[in-house]
Image (tube, rainbow, N blue to C red; front, top):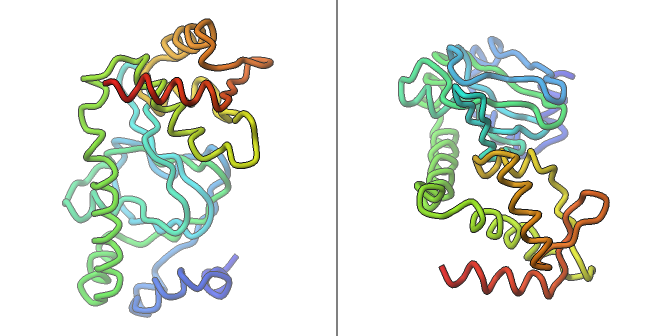
Length: 228
């Protein structure tokens, strides 16, 4: 698929790229990443800034002991690597992995810097997105150091199901336990142990290995996390 075709189908993308100088646009490349492929891994040299034009990305922090922390899912349209380039950081600080098939526009980092110097609109967009990211992440700084895993899991369940009772008596937590572990930065054994305890306390229901929460269980969990 050509970039112009993507722009014709997506007004937001068209507006975003409208101020990009023509010579920079001609040096860009559009690449398809299939589901589960890596766009860039933590520690890789950053040569490009990416624009996620289509699809979803898992943003991961990978640690030397093999642990993986999934701390965000980015949806199109978004940027990849812009934070490191603006901070003059040569290596990627996080891993970006395709959650679905993704189309990514790759821009040489030198061209990206030239672009934002010349285009006030893209500069404001990048600044706003970085501010939103900081506002989202700042309240969570140190969270895992001050709360036990049991509390983190209860909070995750409450936040996941809180808007799901409109047309249902119970809500399925449509996440595998490894995904929950990655999102919370804890081990899958810790997740399994705590889910088992919640089941024994009748705070969740397990059906064929899947986690369900009804409204009564949800209200009990809310009371439990609010006392902290």
